[in-house]
Image (tube, rainbow, N blue to C red; front, top):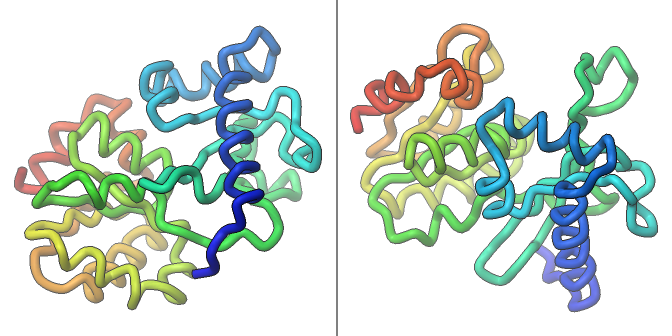
Length: 223
């Protein structure tokens, strides 16, 4: 993985700080961002912990990401990537744009790297940043997130080595065919100690927690 320049590190830190502040503003998109997170039980305290933000007033070069949720990738060494998520109430494919965007040339990384360094015997693994936050905060299972099945196909053999440092690996499977297929790939590569937890049909970690089914996920995990 390429080493980031000092200027890029500073730029990423500035983005995270700026857009985290903008989430607290009075602009319509700021309020929309807070409503979006509140509806997913990821309110102000959690948003602040993970430095979530919103692009209300884009910094130079970030105009294409205006109106999007900002998800910084935090590590022990600081912010190392930033992704932008559409929060409009529509199917992004129908609107001709991706649900997630990122700066050109940014490398794909595992999200919530701090979960790896928490000194726990158990770690969770899922697809999607907000699901990783939900599992970490509401299920109290420190959880990493893979940025998609295609990325696991490319990097899984390396990322799976990290999971072997834990006695128990809880792999959460979204309740759809792609989610189940990805979870199966991760479980096959991650070695002993893997427990696959299937979300209900059509659901993911966050939607189940919002629906009051968090205890069911913990029970399925055997924790």
